[in-house]
Image (tube, rainbow, N blue to C red; front, side, top):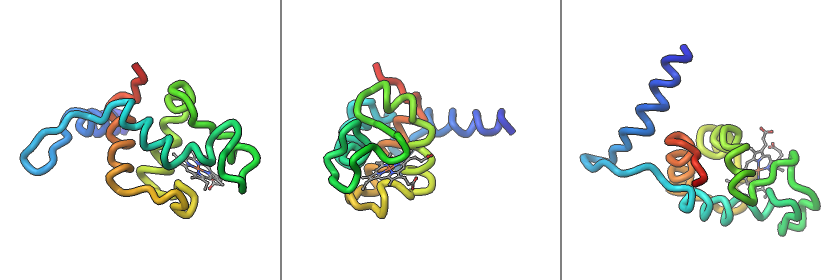
Length: 111
Ligand code: HEC
């Protein structure tokens, strides 16, 4: 089962095929741009969204280390279940979810 999951992750990382075209996995910079736009208004040490005086569930996604540390939870909520952003208040698109998923599934490397 673990081997199967590993194989699936490996396949996702190596064979991003869009139509006939192979596209490389998304970079940290691309993932960062998405997270800054769609998540950081709430998931910051001092959220700019005034409904949240503190980061919800203590999840902070402001810098590279924050994001790498929370990558698996981010993947589950924003890519798989699509239950984040909350009620999609920040208007995240499917393309942005794909970028985030591609970066996490390929490596979640921050350098
Ligand atoms: C409008 C505010 C808001 C935005 C924007 C937002 N979140 Fe959240 N987030 C919340 C709230 C509130 C919770 C706690 C309730 C819950 O878990 O559903 C939460 C919880 C979470 C959790 C914790 C779940 C767990 O496993 O405990 C993760 C991970 C998360 N958000 C990721 C994200 C990501 C990734 C984005 C951007 C794609 C995002 N959130 C955007 C408000 C927000």
